[in-house]
Amino acid sequence: MSDEIRDRVASMCRHLDIPLVGFASAGQWDNPPFEPWVPAEFRPKAIYPETRTVIVIGLPVSLPILETAPSIHYHELYRTVNSLLDMHGYRIAEALTRLGHPSIWIPRDGYGSIGILKERPVAFFSHRHAAYLAGLGTFGINNMLLTPEFGPRVRFASIFTSAEITPDPIRQDNLCTRCMQCVNACPVKALEGHDYPESLTEKKTCAARSEALNNRFISPCGLCIKVCPVGEDRKRFGREDMAMYHEDDTRFSAYHQAWKHVRSYGGR
Ligand code: B12
Image (cartoon, rainbow, N blue to C red):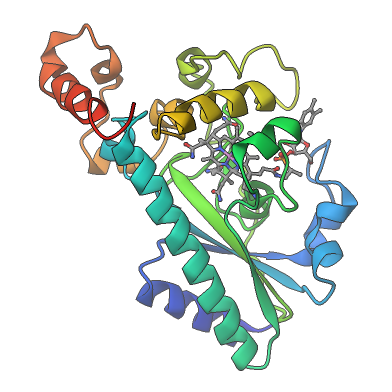
């Protein structure tokens, strides 16, 4: 187990302004922490047999921009965070390879178009499960991984490395408060009526909404992560009073006007 490589990766992340990084051992995928678990062919060693450790990085989704969703502003934030995740993942993998530990980056998403997702809404690797095993958070009712720092407002990418690195412990608590605000906020009711694990996204319904917004240049939706009360980012941005999302609460009309303004431009 290499703590030197671990320190090196942590230092790279600090320099790249990556606030979340966690490490999971590739072997952990073979001991499912809950069922149903990631099928065998989706596991790191099945995708890249050299994998010993999976490094997961996370970048935040800025809450005040997400509040304008669906909007061109959130659309651009999403694109920017995605590009950074892929660039950082690539750089970290290449740096580790140069240090003598062959490594590859796994892109933050991994699909060609929403149309493809409507037919088959699954990617070849799940970053949520990786982030869970790397100790970064726990699953919420909205089917997202909630982190103490940003709740579900964080996007992930993973790096598969042949280096053996001491893993992080899986979190034993449950960050989801089961307030059901995500379930109630979903405009297409995609989070209702599923038994496993607690609630599960009706993926095709969610993907169809995303496609409709994409045709208007204002995808993705993001409402189920906007309303989640979990995350220190709420405190940092002064967004702890969830009543601000009730558009009839006049105490917050300055915000409502701002969101309306942003939503009125740049998309259809
Ligand atoms: C396909 C996809 C979508 C699709 C389908 C929805 C979905 N929930 O998967 C669409 C386009 C609709 C979508 C929407 C969103 N997504 Co998305 N999406 C993905 C993507 C590309 C692949 C997920 C995947 O296929 N994983 C692989 C399979 C094996 O795992 P799985 O789908 O999680 O399913 C396993 C279990 O959940 C379970 N399971 C799943 N379905 C079912 C059904 C039944 C009946 C049973 C029993 C079990 C079961 O078994 C599966 C196998 O083990 C990932 C990126 C990635 N590559 O990880 C992002 C990702 C999951 N999305 C993300 C986000 C943020 C969103 C949105 C909030 C959009 C946004 N950016 O504003 C919404 C939220 C929707 C929601 N509440 O679920 C983030 C999540 C970050 C986080 N903090 O958790 C990810 C990780 C992207 C990233 N790089 O950060 N997404």
